Image (cartoon, rainbow, N blue to C red; front, top):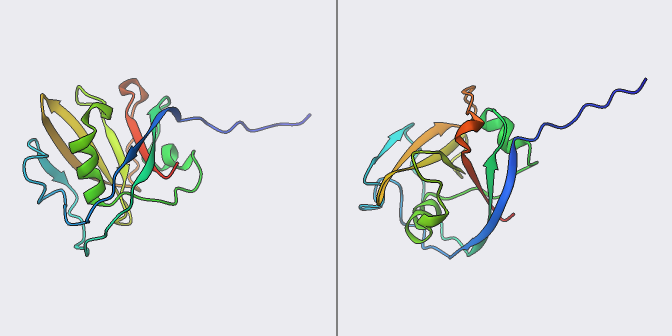
Length: 152
């Protein structure tokens, strides 16, 4: 008898979009009124501004309960990670791509070990929470959180 272990599917593709280039100067804390609901969670290490080029973004919907490592790991090796300024710009220029009603919108950050969780709290009110990537917290698929990956 041959036993084949199936690979667990945690995320399903929803579509793609494109983000523009950025000068690298915006951070979650200096983004003005972009995050009217606040900036919460872990404190990110200070970093130098990084200019970014335009890039394709793949959007995925969570379809099975998982940790962040399981969900993102199921897609293979994620090469490109989000700079804070890219997340800020995405939220400013493509708010319609964010899942609303306080569901998670996850961006794997360039700062090693961190994920930004953007929530739409109300009309034009966003909150960002920084979570440790290696947390053992289980995120439940009933909420259909969305994950955004660069260069996919």
